[in-house]
Length: 506
Image 1 (cartoon, rainbow, N blue to C red):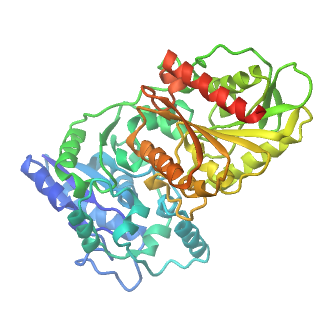
Image 2: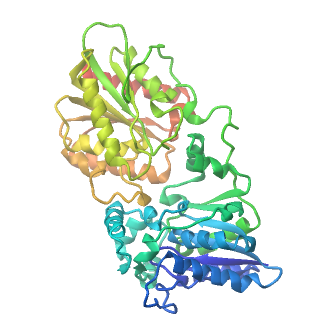
Image 3: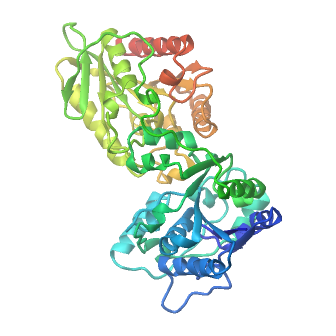
């Protein structure tokens, strides 16, 4: 007999699990949704306040109530914030736990509070300041209506389900978010399953890519005891698709699921495969965090600065400026008589866009100061998650910026990125771009979440009369240069480069 102990996320208590728990029971399992102290009506807060340790004790009590009964196998399920008390409890009762399920949540680390996983970065900064002053008492009011989108994608929720989410919501005790999680490492031996809600921006393929990039935390997920499932919904699957969620939990308990390919098992990871076009083997000229590729032509020439995507783990080796795709683009630009430039920026986490933007701005100034470069003729070319960095340049394009290009870009923050201050929102910035030409390479087989940001950008360009040129790769996926090295891809790359050259030299 499998007993599922279900722990809800921020602002939500045991009530959100009602339908999922009923389906688990109907399939022959047992399900117990843990009432959390200070959140659920039946568990009022004590006078001393509520912290993460309080909720860990709530989960331990549930484990102990089941653990004494023979023949029962416990599966702990933590959604969102709920993974923090789940891991804390599993760390203290590892002998009683058969599996931990991470339901659309992060991977908490020892000594790090749940605050680190709060997606709204403005709120996170405010609460961090409060934690530094040791002000742990009080509550955080739940959102309402469209405000839930700041905490995760509401995709898949009907109007009634969203209203129910609001009706079930309760204030979150601040101590549960500000108190650090303490782990001994005992829970690391417990098998685990990640259930990823793809409409919230993460898929198994994304996790595999992060592992391939050299992130040691992600690489550890290639352990055969770790499995994965995907649900094509938003952040609250217990309300949007409880039957599908119950089925996945049952399969996870049975040890099913997709497993990551061990790092190094593939012949070549996608980001290290060759550039699909023949380009000259020009040497690089390395200056700080910038590499220049320049042909032997005399005199200053226009430059194209290629800005990689992300987030990319800080320890990724080789670093992005040495990836074959970026080097290939730079050498292709050099073959056209331009200066091709690659760089490294510090977009290692979704909270790093400000410092990544500063890195790009510094790289541009370094390039413009080079005597081999025409400082009045520069183009910026962005990729993937780096697409959000276009917003600054669209909002106030300098006179020397002759063209902006983007390849399979993300052009609005994804739901779980928490970028609510408006700075890195290219769709909103486009109306201020004026006559700046924008060349956009669009992947026809883009993931729905990213494709929606691109379509919003295209719609905005029509509404404001922006100078947008679309270069479509109908059968291309995100990363099509290496994933889909077809003649269609090669033709699109040549077309886009010709357009950028024209804007720089015309």
